[in-house]
Amino acid sequence: MTHRADQPPTTTSPCIRNCCLDNDDICMGCYRSISEIVGWQAATEAKKKAILQNCGRRKQAYQSNHSG
Image (tube, rainbow, N blue to C red):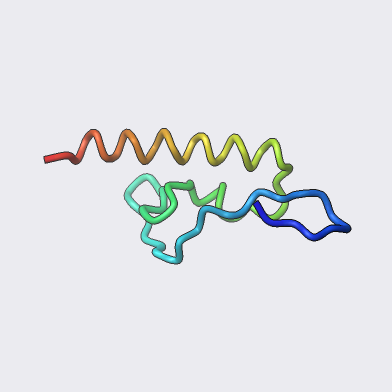
């Protein structure tokens, strides 16, 4: 999390600058959907935290389905 002293804390974007969308429009770099990526800046802190939880679940599911 990053913040300035005069602003409330904000949740940092999970973007790792490795953008590649799969067939379901999920970024394989950060595991956000295209709508989550586009709406990130306007999202509330609660929504951002929910998005991060979704990303974690998607990443875990992807890794489970593609482990070798």
